[in-house]
Length: 171
Image: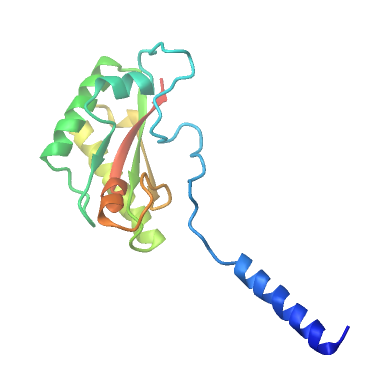
């Protein structure tokens, strides 16, 4: 081979390698670990709803999640109504434990969003506790911006990602 041909081939290989390293947004998110917010209400047992299950919870409360304004963690009137519905269900199912997952949108640093997600989950926990739910039944975890409910870099997606989600973890 000639030097010119070898140089051209090396340049082509280098361009392909650099192009292959370009970061692209995934078309679909990987599945969440078992026992976390997946948006699914399937119990895997036909169509039967098991009392005290996540499926029972979702079917009998106004919503399993509350939403927050940008950079906020206060529980507003709409959130309070949702949490009252959740508290009533928890009172009917006193052996059930839940995890409150705090989430943030993609803006901000990872550390900032982890802290914000934790404040959101704790705000929901504190409100449930004020309604008579034993705080020891409620775990809190923050995923920050790591588990978006909606993909996208716009207000519509961000609004869906600023949330606290109640997940039934068992008895």
